[in-house]
Length: 202
Figure 1: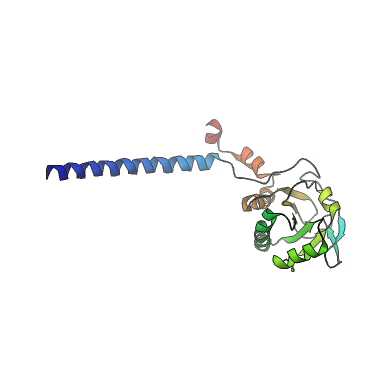
Figure 2: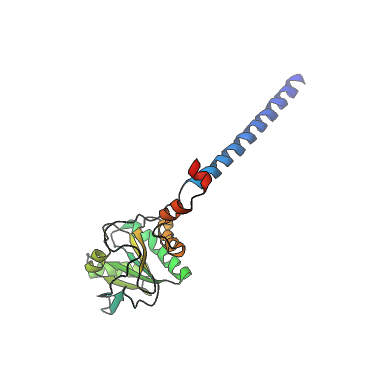
């Protein structure tokens, strides 16, 4: 009986110690969550700057229809997504871009260059991009300083570039919309500007 009592006491002590440890770890996770900045899209220095009025660029979609991207007469907020049929990350982000465009009421345009027309047509069919404009234009990529894919550009209804960047995750893509809603160039700028004093002191 003495052994049984002692073993029960030891077990209860271990349970209490483990509970305190879990609570301490949970508190540390909360502290880290406050200190770690959200992962925003990587904004390049090349191409037009955020806040500048974009130039209207005329190009064509896969069906040969005229498509104008940017400019003062844009009329709608446009999410321009640069992709490639050979880019695996692009493929995983296409559904996210479509969902974000529907939720935010954005005009979604996919842009690419290179490869054969047949490969782009197969890409459009495979990812169900028929309802969206899909343009082939090397000039468009050069205009916005696209060097790596996937890359996204957000242009407001007045044609002003409100955010842009390399987008490898859903969070990166959503950060472009967050940058527009907060009125800052990037999500990182927002974090630095509105960082809590307690975090700065730490």
